[in-house]
Amino acid sequence: MANAPVDRIPAAKVITDPAALGRYQHDEAEWAPYGMPLAVVRPRSAEEVRNVVRFCLAHEVPVIARGAGTGLSGGANAVDGAVILSFEDMNQVLRIDTDERYAVVQPGVVNDDLRAACAEQGLWYPPDPASSPWSTIGGNVATNAGGMCCVKYGVTRDYVLELEMVNGRGELVRVGRRTAKGVAGYDLAGLMVGSEGTLGVITEITVRLRPSRPLERTVAGYFDSVVDAGEAVSAVTAAGIIPSALELVDRHCLAAVDAWKNMGLSADANVVLLGRIDTPGAEGDAEAERMRECFEKAGAGWAVVSTDQQEADALFQARRLAYPALERLGPLLTEDVCVPRMALPEMLRRIEEISQRHDIHVANVAHAGDGNLHPLIITKAGDEAAKARAQLVFDEILDEAIALGGTVTGEHGVGLLKMAGMDKELGEAVLGMHHAVKSALDPAGIFNPGKVVAVRQQ
Image (cartoon, rainbow, N blue to C red; front, side, top):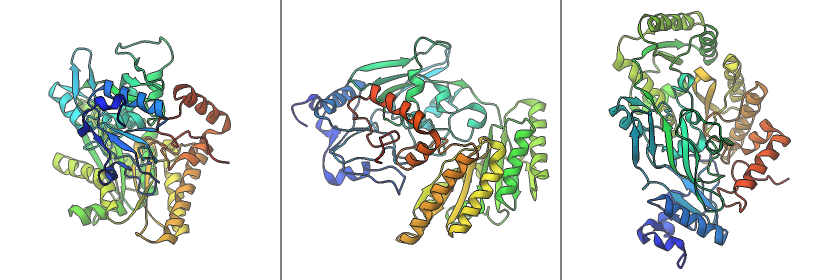
């Protein structure tokens, strides 16, 4: 890579040693394929990113942007001969404007670090994926990440105001705006959110902030089955209650967390439903009680509005620990389907039926309040027959989500694992529109090739 714009980057920021490249080859999607990159570059500025992209354009080299590598769809996986742009060194919160309520950050800023910096100024950045202690804002933007509170406060796209990016011609440009309103031109910033690095490389992000959130009341319910818990979610929706979080954790996840952290949760319940209400004052108290009643009427063996904040926080911490706890048991194939909230009980019923029919262990956690389910398909390492059945389970769950009017991914992204499912969901005409956008904004085809909207072999 000598005698090119990238030699303006210090040698220490360019990694070519095969032994060191290994940790940049793939994300957390264990079943997604990956290749060997030509090099990893750790830029420190937007200008360095632009120089790398221009070099790659001139030499027809693929470019793959990478945050923390916490993705679950293979979206950041290397392809052979690619240059990986790792944003671990572009990790600064550049500005927090308390008057206009926005923050300007580099893409390598960790989600929880931004939230902590905002809290010091009496402000709040709501999107909170379960990976928030590790995942980066750039990666969150790439997949349009959600989280626990998005049932009330929305997903990453709802908070992105402006982006600085390097486009498919190697130009450093800005899209979007920082004003409260603006409709000049197409919403190119919105288009970039969720594009998974296939349309350009984001170098700076301006996000909308909210005032510090109100105190929350936690409602917990224990259920005998995931279907009963799903019925409780539908009841909450039908009652017009808008929780600040509504999460489902099944017995498999509870047992895995207990085995790891000894929290003692699985002894009391097969399924836990966790709701939160942050409406202030007496109105919030009444909403919390109504939610508790919805849980009880749907069949909860125990339902309570918690008065112990430490205990309530521990329950939500168990929800965040579900994925890493299960990961300790063997290779995971992680789903991310989203269905209409009233269809949640039926989707959970269908997942259980698919699991039993194929004799594959499927654990369930869910952002239940917005119909976003994360079935976790578990197999033993080295069991190829089980792995083949697990792939059938994965595909059938996608099909059932589409059949119920849902989508194959609510927040993890398409990456490599959901490409066939997206084909089914969108249909030929809409896929053609996606391909046209990709060709227009990435005419050389260098940005994250082979992912999301890549032309499929017939």
